[in-house]
Length: 72
Image (cartoon, rainbow, N blue to C red; front, side, top):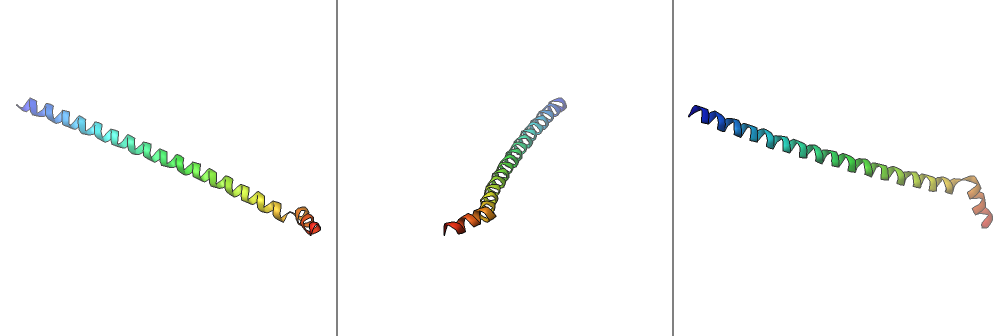
């Protein structure tokens, strides 16, 4: 009887450990996905900011300003 109890205990223990391991792996995958998504969004925003900066610099470029004044 005692041997059967130990066997059932070991089976339940191993099952719990395996379920916990699967939970940790899925949590790790979710965290990795969120990190990759955040990095992608940050890269997109940096690129958008870079484009806006180039657009602003082209508007305040002295040659562009003088050309715009000459046209008027």
